[in-house]
Length: 356
Image (cartoon, rainbow, N blue to C red; front, side, top):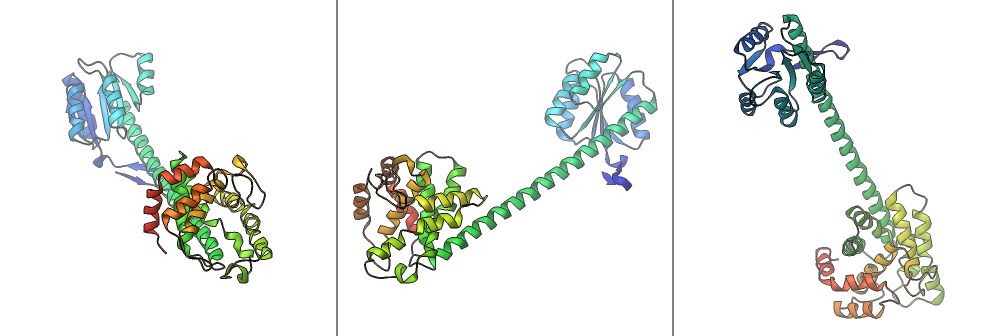
């Protein structure tokens, strides 16, 4: 048991500390035990390294005092065992040989102190007190670091949740200008996440794509309601205005320090480009179109085809599949489209969980 005094001074309560004394010389065990008992510590005795190792499995000790030269398991081997399996326990080595090399080695292996026989009572008492105090400080510091790590993780999770909520709110702002539902954007995120995984991309990237893809149409904020909600065919001028939404979305999202919003800006700008260069707004072709833009293009068109809109009815999955395949290498990246079609059953399963 430890308590905190003034100026962060640690006070170790000897009544709550148990010491394991290990020495193959019964007289030495008796001497050390009498000193330990005099100072108010509880203790147990072991006549060998093997016996000490066995007792460590059954009881919890604050400190091990061990001889170095023992038959069978040596004190150094016992020390190594303790550092591996009982890292919270302090260890003091006791030896009849004043060997500087051995002393340095045991300290390097993690011993808290090194006492040479014959020792003075006060020397051993001071080593015990220092070892227990150092142990208490290390345990307190470890607890503090664990608490700090937990707090940092909690704050990080809170920031991630807050960021994702902000992005969801931003995508909803576009939905209120369109006939599409929030579920469309949720599906787009999930489809893009799944297609990116099929393409072999790492978990963090796929998660970012799932969060950013729903922002693909945020630029529709800048398109008039009379055009967005028009039930019939658009005039050439009206369609020209609709085609401005990728640049508007890019301007809204770009310039942010957030990786998610930067990815969203890229998707907003490129999701209407076509693989053969006939898309908009820049007429990019092939790999000049960003990867997230190419992924989102497939997912967005599929969901648009199979979803009812104010200007059209939903079409059957097989017909949507045919339309997608007709756009292979012209509208869509052929490799990504093949992955999408080959795993369409996964996409349909996702869709089934997020129906309008």
